[in-house]
Amino acid sequence: MRRAARVAGFGAAFVAAAAASGGAAGGIDPVTVHVFHDDAIHFFPDDPGLFAAPPVEPADNGRAVERTVTLRPPSGPYRIFARVTTKPIPQDVSTVHDKWDRAGNVQLVLPDGPPIEVVKFVTAYGGRTEHRVDVTHLAPVLHGERTFRGFIDTWVSPAWRMDLEITFEPVPDEPTPEWMEGWINPDDDRPPAWVRSVFYEQEMSAERLAAGPQWVDVEIPDGARRVVLRYLTSGHCTDGRGADEFVTKNNVILVDDTEAHRFRPWRADCRDFRDVNPYCRRWFDGSWSADFDRSGWCPGDAVEPEEIDLTGALPAGPHRIGFLVEDVRPEDESGKGYWRVSAALIGWE
Image 1 (cartoon, helix red, strand yellow):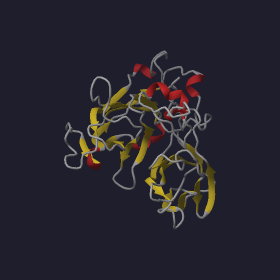
Image 2 (cartoon, rainbow, N blue to C red):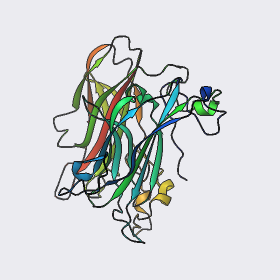
Image 3 (spheres, one colour):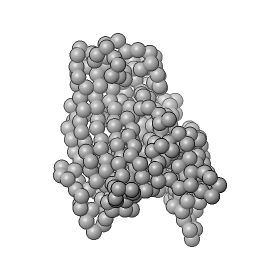
């Protein structure tokens, strides 16, 4: 069975609302901003805007779409959800143009620094997917005029269509305990005060890491009482061989030359998503390509963040954070391994 929307948040002041609630606080209705609607994503360097529909603009040879919208949150406490839908474009009555599982994301493009991955996912093998992800932790940067970019790593034209909605859901008058599950700190009812984009790398390869970790300078403001790193990662390879898609590797986060966190991303539940992968291949041993365990992702599902409390390691002041994936498969005549990694700091005062 496909899993329901994830409700993982950073503060009890933003409580998840649900359709079964007794009503939003003060009778305030949810506010939804439709960012993308049926917007085409494809790869065509000669004419990336072939399927463009203003005000949405193409980027990255058509593999991305961008739009600037104005976000006006409601008054009072609320939660924020991003709903992203990917749909393969039909070729005829029996097939689609892009049958492959493709890495993708929704990014918040900021004027300074790298983008923030709002939702990270991998498409199904030629199937439709929909992900509703709690992004309340990004509340400090989800207001006013904001630019979103939807990306799918396709090499086909035409290929996919994407929908994106950002919904602000006011807190219901009487939230139930079930809606409180998944909080990082359920005893803390204060929302984050700030968000800092830290790192965005879509091809962390052995060659790029040959000189060691990739370092980023950060400044932690005075008054910070809690700092969490939201880290998104997935391992891939260019030729279908084992590493780094099917052989997990250590992901290491360092702070000021000291190792702060180490883990090995892995997903062993990909069989649960067979129903959204209509074009996956069956191998000689009877197994299906969509079912294989993978390094932090499954075809047709969103990638879950690793949430790392760095409060003790990041007191107020300047620091540097290093990102490293160990033993990435080097490039050879047939291909290479690589990792898609992003990170943002979430701070409370």
